[in-house]
Length: 348
Image (cartoon, rainbow, N blue to C red):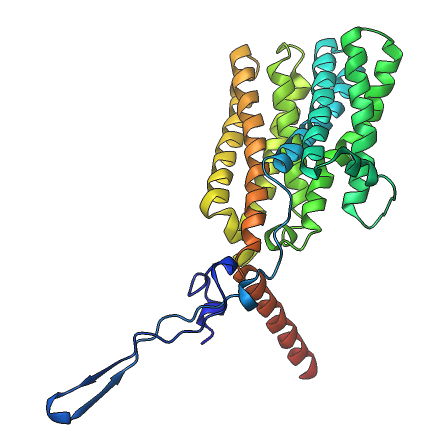
């Protein structure tokens, strides 16, 4: 009667498909003629388990798509672009500096727009700044996003107007200081929830998001910068792609049944497309990144791969909340491991 619990896919169904059912169907009795009993052959289907009253064990986050995945992508690209802009300014690459600052400013403002749209009312974002809570990634993230957006937006505006060159450098430095945390805190934010397939890879998601942000920022700036100045962008793009692919591989393979949503259905299709785009973009950058067409093509592929990664991770987490097995099976495994550890301790 426990086959549905211990075997993935054996008798499970989505929590929103009805109340708990343990049915015994198809039982048939076969009798010979003249009243002689031949015996009965039970034909019982797999037992189907769901949560009580058909409700989900873990509630699905109320975050909306595409608002939140776009916020994750744009914020990450903006953060890495701000860092690249500061480095380009120090190494006297004026075009790369300008492109990076404009990318960071536009990305930060667009990400805030999508975040506010997801929240529903602009004042809700301001309410998030009323209290700072060091143990909350959401609270800390608000205090990362606010100064970064202000600095990156002001720097981009001054860059467009051509005023106050010293202010540009100061604003770019402030944005760069918050760029790294902005690119990675969203991975911490997702991992800190009770969503099974986000919480399990809590040590890998920040690396996935950080690498994805580097690939996107490097790719976008590389596509709009002359190839003779785009050397730092190419290096950032390739490094970010390698980090993203390596960390994402661990997410998809190291967590047993909780890695399953990253391979199945819509999330699986998104993740496969993301890996193809990222790997192809990194390879093309290394082979043809010093040519104009190669820089544009590889930058486009890297940005697309980063965007698809955010959508894939988001959709996989949502899917893991809708099937009870992603909560029950890991719980039973952890309980069995603790019991075994206790038994080993007591026998020593």
